[in-house]
Image 1 (spheres, rainbow, N blue to C red):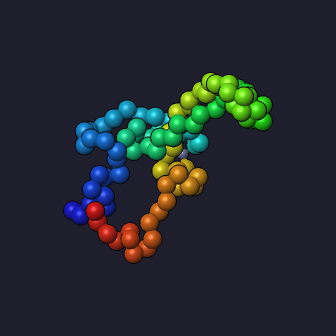
Image 2 (cartoon, rainbow, N blue to C red):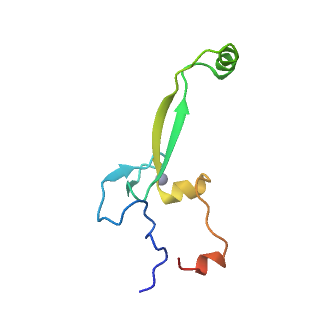
Length: 92
Ligand SMILES: [Zn+2]
């Protein structure tokens, strides 16, 4: 059977089933290797104050927040894009 993608839409190794993560947007359970991972850095300090502090040479701690998105939400939010119509026919 022809494959749509060489990777099968997964990242990393070709191991079997992986653990489930919840989509940060819709809550759907997706396998970790198939979900789109995004790390967002946020700060407790207000943006404008942080900019002034940074100008004075202060180091402001940032808190990383890891978010997983299912493919539907990743496409909707512009994290990944679908290919053009002709491109989609290519099997890679
Ligand atoms: Zn989702």
